[in-house]
Image (cartoon, rainbow, N blue to C red; front, side):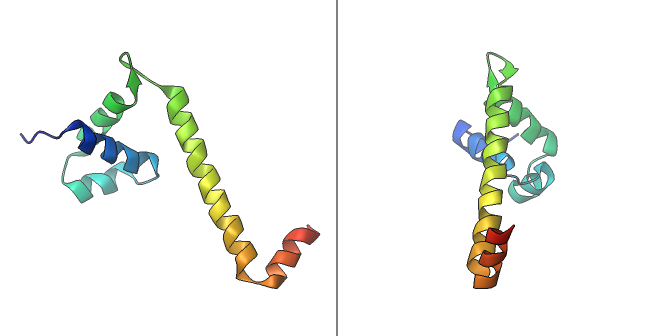
Amino acid sequence: MKKYDKDFKKETVKKYLDGQSVASIAREIGVNENTIHKWKKEILSVNGEIDQEKLLMRKRIIELEMENEILNGVSQSSPEADREIRVH
């Protein structure tokens, strides 16, 4: 069985937190999905318990980043789109 260092596991979990699916990550790096779930528990835990607050904050950051991308795309797409946003 191949051993993976802590940094590799952290980067893998970061991909998950950034929105990539476990299945996609597993295919990408060539490990079983259960292994990634195990790493998530390991990396996101504090004293053996998953740090829910940390996980919720990270998910909220991802949501806000996606909203910003959408809003920036709308405002940069055309002057008409910009006017529409101001009107509403």
